[in-house]
Image 1 (cartoon, rainbow, N blue to C red):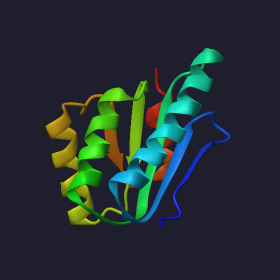
Image 2 (cartoon, helix red, strand yellow):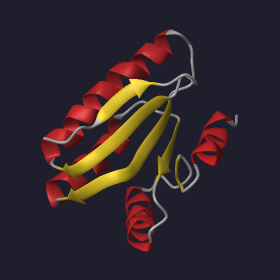
Image 3 (cartoon, rainbow, N blue to C red):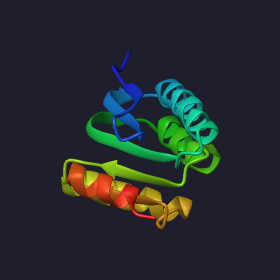
Image 4 (cartoon, rainbow, N blue to C red):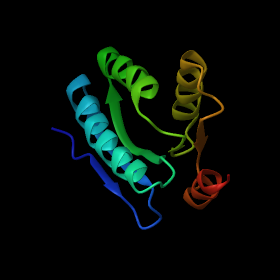
Length: 123
């Protein structure tokens, strides 16, 4: 079972650490935790921001990728920064996914954590 983490960081951003190989079940479990935290932020009238750290992600099967696509349309977020390792496969795969789900303006790929957080905090 992956050792994923979903938590509210010190900047009041929902932070997700995707660790190891992912399945549909692991993606949906992270999505549920993220949804709960996003609702908590909404109750506090705070922006619904996500930092999705995929630097330690392993393989994902087709059902896992489909679950990511579904969650991106269902989760009540304003912006998501995806933090990757800069590898061409990761960068290319992420860009294809973002294009496919039509969320290029609300989800952006970064290789630098500070840059990702700055983008998230922009109004």
